[in-house]
Length: 177
Image (cartoon, rainbow, N blue to C red; front, side):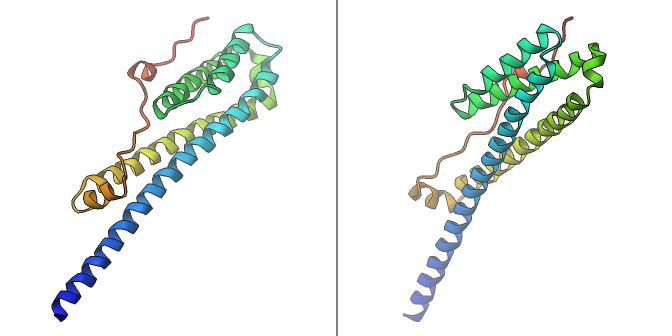
């Protein structure tokens, strides 16, 4: 009788540990997603400042920035956010590369600071994406592994989607002058 009681207590403790582990991994994924969101918001806040600084320069930059602003307001799903994020990144890269052709703009201290901030933000976005995908990998592995998968089914935990970028968006940005 005592052995049965000990087995039941150990089973309950095991379930509690598995439950807490799965909840922790789920929260970590949600936190990682929030970090991507924060960095994308930061980038979106910097872009209008770049628009203002570059207003007096070539129309192409203005058009590129307007595309960025339009694109960032259309987010729906994780896949669409990944695609949109890559479009914005590519347009930002084009803008920063084209600034080389405008010495006055390149020498402008405000533009330089915004360029540094934007480049740093792009790096933070890349890191946040990587951290999110690592978190999703740990979570997905946990909910698919035995005995976690039994508890995950009861908790209705589903596999999370990775932050993916289309192959076409991975190609180098081409700048045509």
